[in-house]
Image (cartoon, rainbow, N blue to C red; front, side, top):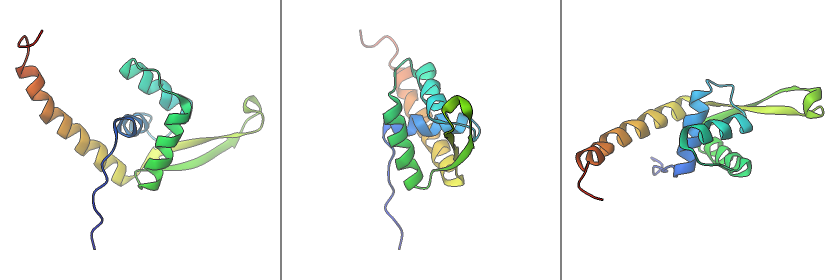
Length: 112
């Protein structure tokens, strides 16, 4: 039996794309900063971690613990990387957005 497709929300998609851009070495603060730099929008770290948790539950990202460091009080960072399904989803979403954005270009100058 085939599972119904789960669609990603805007923040989930931005987090997934940020994880892809970090090439498997992304952690929460880095992912948040990547989204802020690309979108100009401030993103709370808590919302990034909630989205990462949802993406991991959906099988689109995986996580691993790094080594504890003295700079972090002996705590380890959690690093995230896209899964094969996550890369496939990211490609599909980008392709869809590119096709849909053609309508925006066609409207240039038609609305004030």
